[in-house]
Length: 175
Image (tube, rainbow, N blue to C red):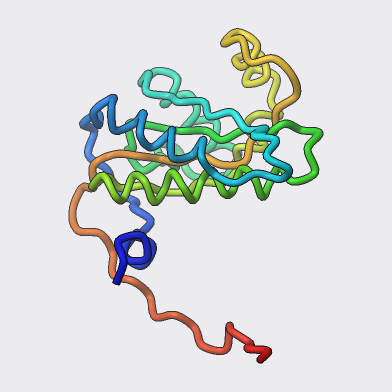
């Protein structure tokens, strides 16, 4: 089996990360893979906010905890030290699809580098909040951006979960 298909079949959502920070060069490779994702009309209308600063990462986790309604102390990023937030231009009709392609590329890139990853939703609700709009402005990210998702990245704490059985009846051939 070719290595790309193997990576697709063996990548898992990780929900237990070690606190150790991955190498900066690995994070850069994951981001670069995201930047090579396909996009509608090749607009490339996505931005990746790479959060490795613990204070901001923890603040985002607390915001997400509240948005999702989890109990006090729950970490919706499951301890991942790196959060790559995918944002798309709010006026692009393919924004959710484009951002999703970026996410998938980054998830697979992390796996190919021996790192765990997890797709966490609610970035749209998070980046609708005034403090996160202000954060983008403070970082020099101009324009209207919509959050798509968070790509949590880090070293896996424990064994990755086994693949669930694929459901049948999901392919219809027209020959």
